[in-house]
Length: 369
Image 1: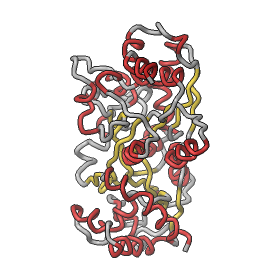
Image 2 (image 1 turned 60 degrees about the vertical axis):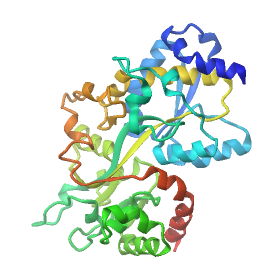
Image 3 (image 1 turned 180 degrees about the vertical axis):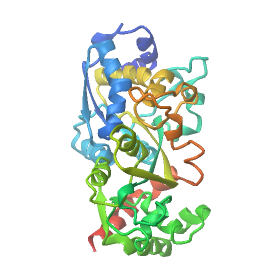
């Protein structure tokens, strides 16, 4: 235990000194993320520069949608094969509460901002758990096929348009989980924004949400991997589907697909890293060295060159500029841009940390009916 504490306390010094203790660090890492355009942005902004700097190998795994279940299983089997895991904020809280993720002392283990501001202050409210290192602000919103909008009809603008089969006929796609879907169902059924979570805590509120989802269930394709809804849109198999805004940005701006975005009631969330608890010392030392590098001000700003997610550090925001290859200004494509954030639904991370397992079970039972 003393050795582990020593390694953690000196991680920042190791990074500053370069590869001074490289012999004490693992020479490869398995990093778990979401795949697709998002993992590509991490590869460009973090992984490739770090591999060039250190000569190590980074193995990409796309299992983040199953991170909580898989880390639980790894603990049960006493076989931890992952080194670093990308998760949403609510899942980070759950993993921390269950002892599956280790606590991070941001001010000694992560880089200061260029002006000397400590990391904890630079991340501010984005750091919703002691085990969580925020990377990006993102949203789940809706993409739709422009060429499938009925003649004489205005294009959809809101998440609530997904429930309007008369105005916007055709197949939909929604994530195969309760998060966002339950909130949208209540909001679009007339529940006031500020009352959604109080309503969702009750059996009656949950029944109301499921009843609203029943109205489109037969026309809905349920996705699990974040690449699925954009592929369904690209293939014209759906008219409208929920997807991460960065994936839709890639479709629209990079691939020039005939897709538009309905921003109103986008589900605003935070994504970042957790370090699995129980890593061997050489793997832990490597992970902490990587995190010191990959979560500094410049690196988080660099990711926004490749995907339209806002960096979680306050000091990174002024450095966000143009897309690395397209040369377009990235700010108007961020979920936080005023034109996109007129009606934003902020995910209640702590609420979902408490209720997720119960509502997961109920949601899957509802899907099976």
